[in-house]
Amino acid sequence: MKIIEKLNESKVPIVPIDKRLEKYRGKVLFPEKLAKANEILAKATLPKLHSDCPLN
Amino acid sequence: MNKPRYQYKTENHFEYFEFYSEGAKGIVKKVIEYQKTSNENIYNLAFGDYDEAAKGIDDLSVTNNGDSLKVLATVASTIYAFLEKHPNAMIIATGSTSVRTRLYRMGITNNLSEILEDFVIFGFTKNETWVEFEIDEDYEAFLVTKK
Image (tube, rainbow over all chains, first blue to last red; front, side, top):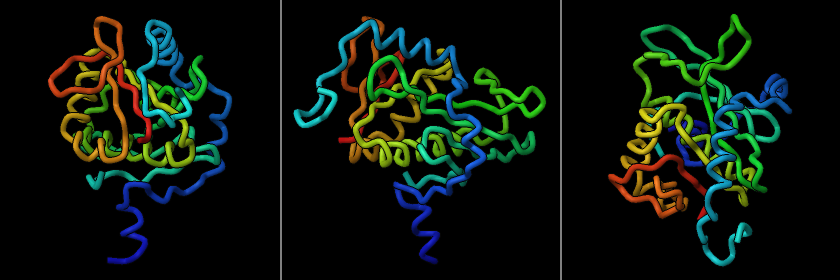
């Protein structure tokens, strides 16, 4: 198998950067889902994670 | 997750991804977004079809392209890419419908052992608490972070 194919099948893939996607920057493409996520996050305390997690 | 998936591309911050679904209905452009929420370091994962005519996104569309597993595997793959770029982030995901949320749950269930090798995953219950993900339980949302 070629090296590039192996890389593409790895868990952390090699992702091409396309500057055209910068057009999305600053835009909220899914405002209703973001609102729903914020609503859920406001309802409950976040779960406890491992002690070295920066979110704790 | 070494399931068949589409090639995708991203921008410098790894917060927006694009790929093309190919199936019975033709080629459909899909966009994935990791949007900052009101909680620091928590990003909302959402994806949908890009409507070329309207120049907008439709996250309620049912493409019926016969490739939903491949699409989900592609979205799951971007989680690895996103968390590699944002290692301290958490990702919240909700379905746009209850049916779609169940589909996500099934996707997680079918790949749970592999997911747990790298990630911690929680479900948001109807009692409005976060609990560690368990198979066959219903959740309204999911929260994922790196171990």
